[in-house]
Length: 281
Image (cartoon, rainbow, N blue to C red; front, side, top):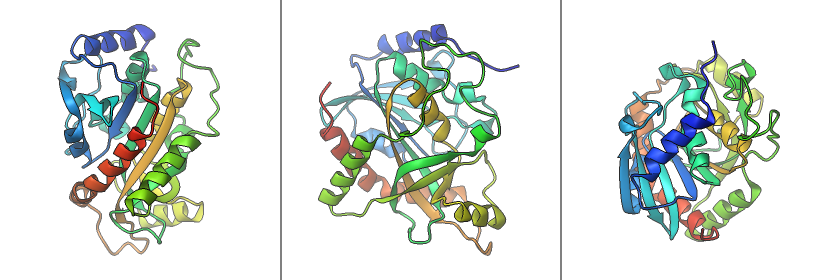
């Protein structure tokens, strides 16, 4: 049986949020592993633990705080999702992407997604930021699409186009911001695998062969639902480590967390610059 949520579920969660914040956010930000410190830059913040919220999926992963931080950044009203739920935790795709549906029900039109990813492109270095230009949806190709099941036309079309999944205008703004700040913003294709095991050397050689630049375990389902709902999306990967195609080095979640902590100031500066240049809502 397919687990589904309806507009009524999204509206109930959105109403819960509205009753607990004075802000009306127009930009949503989803923070990946080790990147939750970005929420500290939100001004006039209202904090809502997601454990209190109806229908909201619970994250069990270290580095995902499980709260919403709603306030102002660079004059923009933002909702920061500090911690996300993952498919590998046992959640359905409908549950994993419910937060994006709720953001859309709140009137949010722009979504910024971040993640920690392994760098496959050998020109990358640990600590780089990668602007996601496109993605490969391996989980969706295997049949686990968040759009599987009955389609509510009021939420989006049955067959949404994914040609510009990552908005060209937002990508251009991110590149300008990085140039002005004096650091290089890598660009590339992100692939989402189910996890939770890290990839084998054979997996990684295959991904490199088909043109993947970075690999992770999130983001793509959320982007799919955001585009279904007509939202504009900006995606940024923190390259937490360079993957080992030869298989002689172990990858750990602690390494991912530490890199996220070190790169957070640069990622914060990048996102602030993008928000600063968005039209004020």
